[in-house]
Image 1 (cartoon, rainbow, N blue to C red):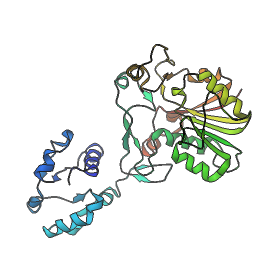
Image 2 (cartoon, rainbow, N blue to C red):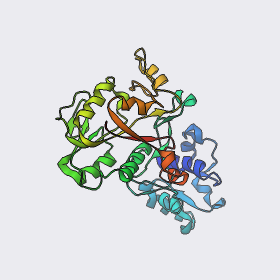
Image 3 (cartoon, one colour):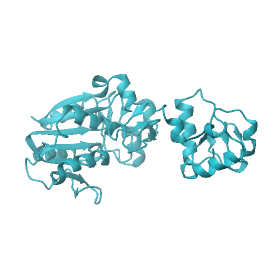
Image 4 (tube, rainbow, N blue to C red):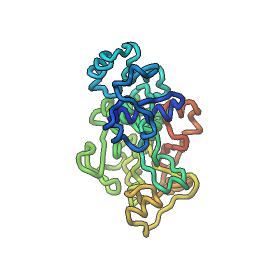
Length: 325
């Protein structure tokens, strides 16, 4: 093994997920000297010493050089049955599953940032954590929204009229677009990210246009929150459903301060440099004041511990299903 990206990830994952497995890196002195600091305590041997070392298997992590490395190992007398690709090693050890793409996962990829705020506050949907699907790229929060959409709405039935999706998660958008075609409209404030460019505080759509409006991890970026919710309510059909999620700190009420303006202060108080508030445990009351009846679906209340672990969900995550009141 050398210190290419696949090797680094393999070592990190094994040390965290299978800590009882002993790892020895096969590399040369030059590569060992350039190893990331967190791996400098791992024993290593040069390729010439393989025959002198006892091992159960050799994992070849660089997939694009698998055949070349395997040939070199065979020339040194290594038993072919002990040489495994990364996929072969992980097969049978995949304890996780992505509910969006259906892939079995050996380890979720790290996502998010590790800021100081997370040392004192638990914020569902934020922070550095294992939560990325290594196959489709979906995040934990998207997988929970998808689960809610599948289990508590008819949005994937094909019988819904029109759908508006803000800042679309591609893994969900692709499925809805395939089902609804032009009846599905994705929107974003930035050009090129969605079907249309739209300002959520001043939408170009007529009243009562959409059966579903989806808006995940957007409102925490929007200054004029009341205008945004008002526009969503206006564009939603009378019996339509607004699917909403955002990072939430359940330890406090929603916090926003007009004096928090710099990137460093926003990270300090809101957890991200482009956030303008941190939603809290008053979120249901807050949204109901904008003219919605709100049903809050909390992950730990509707999913078992085994399901949360298997599908890589966030225990404290929530999705809100909102209708016009």
